[in-house]
Length: 143
Image 1: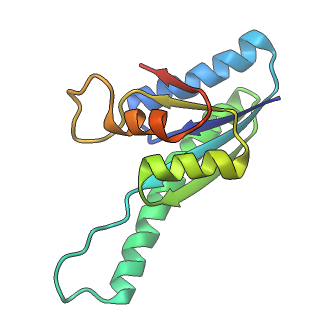
Image 2: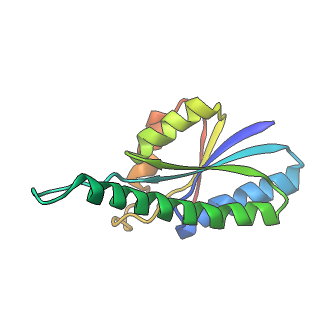
Image 3: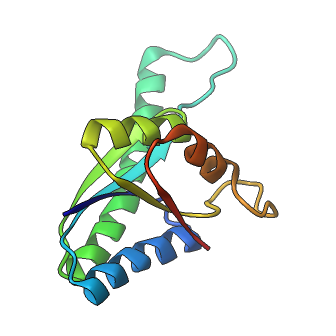
């Protein structure tokens, strides 16, 4: 059984990476254990008039956004007959993916080459580049 971590942010490249996983399972008959991960950047707060309650509300809304994105991806996998676990995380994206690979015992990372970041002109996204260097397992990038 292969244990895949699919880094999913809802971008077009992430959707193609998810479809690659569906096609892989269908074409090979391989049993896959899929972990869908969405990482939200922690907010950077400036100023003095920000309360702990406001910070918690902001974090909760980011996690809710992550869960919505993950639910969409999980529905695609379930429609293809695959099961998955979803993980909504906060922090540095590459570091959280690397930590999840170790914690979940994944043997491969599947992700798009570019996500929803603001630097869409880059050939290889900065997050994908960091993940390649952070994890000790193969990383399959889908364009």
